[in-house]
Image (cartoon, rainbow, N blue to C red; front, side):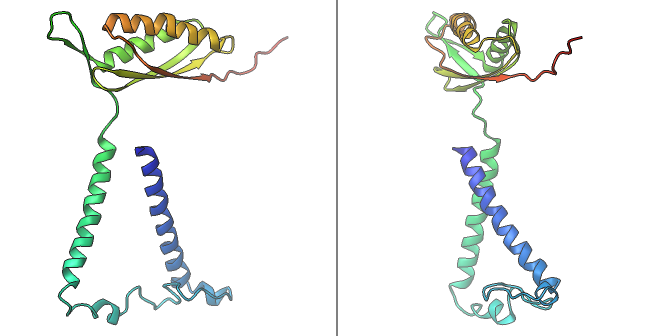
Length: 198
């Protein structure tokens, strides 16, 4: 959700900046006169001496009582939206701790990075996996794992997935005392140079 929102907001921001930048460039360099073309009527800059807002446009609402409250309200909303967007980037969906049942009724907390490290090293120990990355998400009591595995050319994806489920994830579930560990695994082929045969 956050990635989609970021892409939409960045796309819209980029489009607005592109249109404004092109209009300033065309107007300030007087390209329509030099290259003999016409710009649409809504184009904000038509010559090097044009301004974005005329003196009349800048001062026409100054005497109205609603003008300054509306300006400050719009600027405040834009500031809060930008601040919310900035804070949303710093939040991570990575699970920092996992609550596990220790058998004494109190429970215990396991560091998420510790389990990620174990998943990564266990997956890389399997024949055919050259590298891996692991990220835990979800909630404390119901973690979810996302793995990316780089497969060697001789590896069989079905064997790797089977070993991942029956060995690596099973050991992780058992050692952490989890009833389940839903996992999404992405397999990627590792590129190698062709071997020379003489």
